[in-house]
Length: 74
Ligand SMILES: [Zn+2]
Image (cartoon, rainbow, N blue to C red):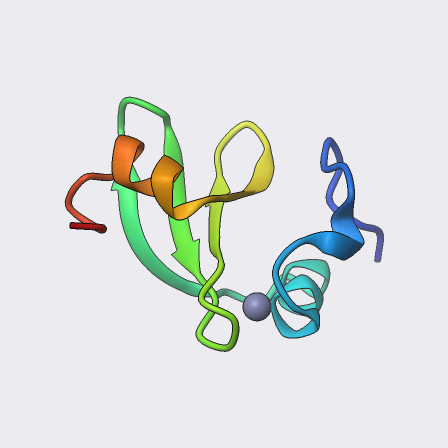
């Protein structure tokens, strides 16, 4: 079971619980879908980190979430 590809600084992202969830193909809580970005937005219930899974899997800052998923924040 490898780390998701195209993701730098993996050990600095989110918390151990959500990293392990991705590494073991468990679902985080899905909070939004973006057709424009062809991506799904997830949120870790433990550390509140937002994760976006589209072409790549990466964390998003709250500012990025507000920009791309305005219904989620604010
Ligand atoms: Zn987490």
